Image 1 (cartoon, rainbow, N blue to C red):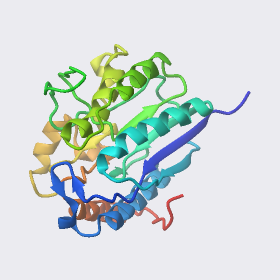
Image 2 (image 1 turned 120 degrees about the horizontal axis):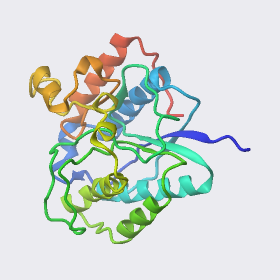
Image 3 (image 1 turned 90 degrees about the vertical axis):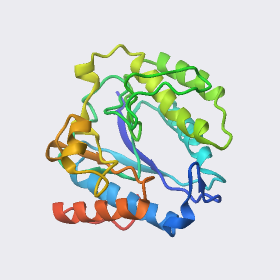
Amino acid sequence: MNQIKNYVVCAHRRIKSTKWVWKDTRDEGDIYEIYRQMCLHSLASARHFLEGDWEYILWDQEIDHINEAMPLNNQLTYDLWHKEPCNILWVGPDVQFVKPTKIFGEFTDFRLFNWTDPKVWHEPNQYNAGFDNLFNNDLSYHPHTMDPKLWEIERKMYNEWNKTEGMDSYSNQQIIHNTMFWSQGLEWSDAHRPELFYQAQWLPTWAPLETQDVWNQCSYQDAQVIHWHSSRHAPTKLECMRQVNEALGVTPVTELK
């Protein structure tokens, strides 16, 4: 019997356009290098804290615009999952492991873990989808045991994806993943795992830590994985990741492999 492979997957790409849906990234400096550094910190934290035997895959194809990234990631995930029996953990560049964390082998269903901001989402969209609990998908787990019918949902929505510039296209991947996730009928106590994906969108200075804890329904001190929301000023979030890894004694990595 072939051993099931575990993959940690991330993406770091040169993007020709500096327009990022609602902002221009030129205002934040060398965004390619900033995100490269984020990926290095994220990978170093995973090497230190993410349990299990796993391989790292970096997707680095150059693209014209940020809105091309999410459809491409969906396609590459679909291709990898169908290529061989495997478990795929997508880890965004601004996702940092801060305590021993076990995900591989822990879940048989497709998994998201915690809210995004806003938590409730009923905005107009091409899929006419709405969510009383909208989960963030920058940490998402596709185990080899997930229901193959979820891919039918994904493929149908992927093929209808409006990939033009704008917030609608940018939001579509999260809509697709939430549609897949909530179709599984999970109980709330099982679905909501904030300690596995603490959202730090207001840290370090835009709100007190206590406010962020209340929002997550989880203490920062109990978090195993932190999502820094780098779209809310990437240089500041990179510095948070650097300081946290340093404080935790995480061994730096110099290559994304």
